Length: 178
Image (cartoon, rainbow, N blue to C red; front, side, top):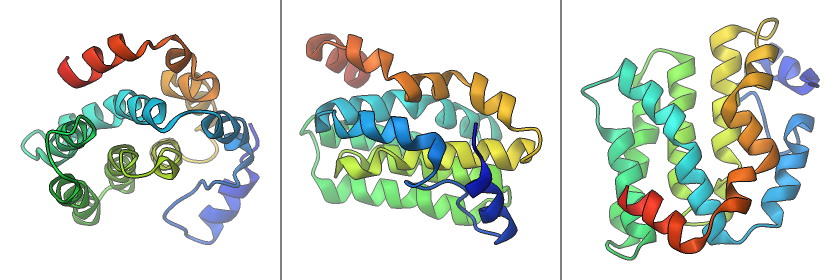
């Protein structure tokens, strides 16, 4: 895995260590470009589960990440309007500014980007950008590669296997009701 761009961003002390131009995300970006907006929303909701769970462990009494996801699902299903969901999403980004851990801040932003995918599909890539940033922050640049390569979510992102197997009826039922 080519992480040269990430090493440069670390040297520059950037908060976000990956970008749309990161070589390791090129294949994913190509696959994202082929997807319908609805598919990307479902994918983002599914992939948000890992960062959401990690935040729930670290901050069990802070419900902002879960609330943002719940509100975004309601927005996507037409039950609430965009301003209500946007307010919840912005609260997750605000949480990122409040936490002291760079890893947890990146996870907050990952959840926020996943939720914002309802608004526009260009937010979909934000989830892996921030989640991969969290992994590098957690393990360090020298030790992160095995975790980046073996992460189940990374495999999902690289192949989008789950998305290709979704049927609209089953995915809506699974993601919005279950």
